[in-house]
Length: 279
Length: 269
Image (tube, rainbow over all chains, first blue to last red; front, side, top):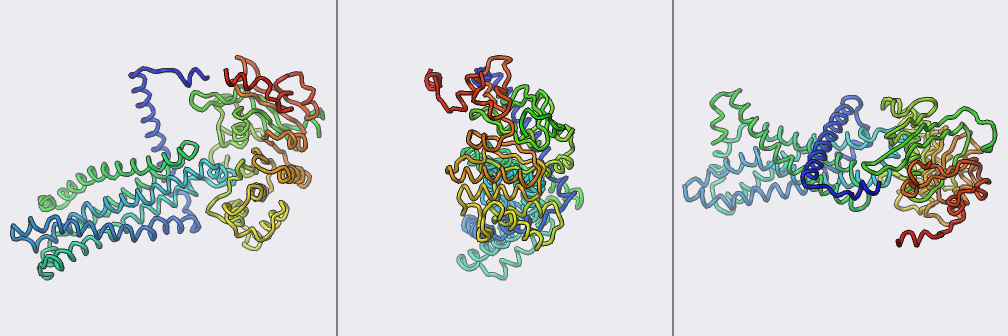
């Protein structure tokens, strides 16, 4: 027994062990996700578990998402204004800021803030519950830990990340407009007129679709990491960190593939007009 | 009842049960049978697998080898829903009480009733107050959070929570660890009282010999596998508590008397 624990392994065996571990974690995560969706379909969560999760994920994230969204819009305005002004297109800057926010930065930013603020906290909370045997206690009292702990958090993330994205988009658009019209003196009428024509409903829709996937990924990853944490304070900290890192990577990977998919979908649905999306 | 009485039908049975976590084998070839109504105390050094054994009894862990059965049902073969139903026949007092941090004492104790019955708020309140009263806690603690309670109070709330569904089997994991001698005796009295009031089968895991001798019908002593020779049984003692002191196995006597012996030298070596 002791020998097995301290046995030295070569680099090839080490690589194999790492690959095996990665596949095992992926398999476990897949099973966990299937179980979670199974519980969502089978039984709705109680108000007593859902409302606190909605409050934690949604209400308490509003100030952070609003402030960061606004400053991203303002920073974009500051960084891009002079280039656009040199080309005599300062009044068209709104179209660039708005479409970037709605399609990319809004969803990614809101999701990243949520992964850091809420995802890590959820992972740490569940990890602490596991370490202190509260998860086992739930099971002994006839409650399924996935139904009781994971489902409300997942629903809260899936529903509220798109709503927070709308907030981040709105604040970013307002922040950009404020800088361009009030600080750089571009006529507000022309700024808004040019902005209007470029952002289509499909852009808003694709941003919200991405946000839904990001929210779902954050919810699942955070809860999975939390419920599979190692014992002790170090395990709790590690679960929290792993949750953020894995969520952030997932957000970027999903963003890339969904971006491709949604652009191609647009092309299939509306033909060559996809070119305008890429313009 | 004593270990020598004719045994009623076993409620909990382990047949050659083993469990490993990765490369680390914790329990090996455990065969054990616990009849209805018996209070079994499991003693042994830290790390010998006592808590793991308790979690195997209730199906929170599945054995790597062998079979653990409860009321003639193999737990590892039960579907999730049926396993959940079976678990409701157990009450579990966890080592650190495992109270839900985000809930008040009242909500902790009421949890099982809310989850598994359709009792009205008034019925739940009455039941919760009765249970808290039984473990000697005043109504004033009802709206406190677990973080505001002392260790002894947490254990008593945990006991009230475990008892609220009137379980057939009570599992106690180190119920007196971290408590002062008086509070330890209070918990021991509560265990005795619980059995006197309800015909429960109990499994108590502890290091506390005073508690063991006070509550046990039967004592089982486990050894850590690292201290055993290959093939040597992990159960060092299985018998009535009064036989412990006369046990021929030096390791059992050493544990019961709490003597370090040459352990310090072994550890240094």
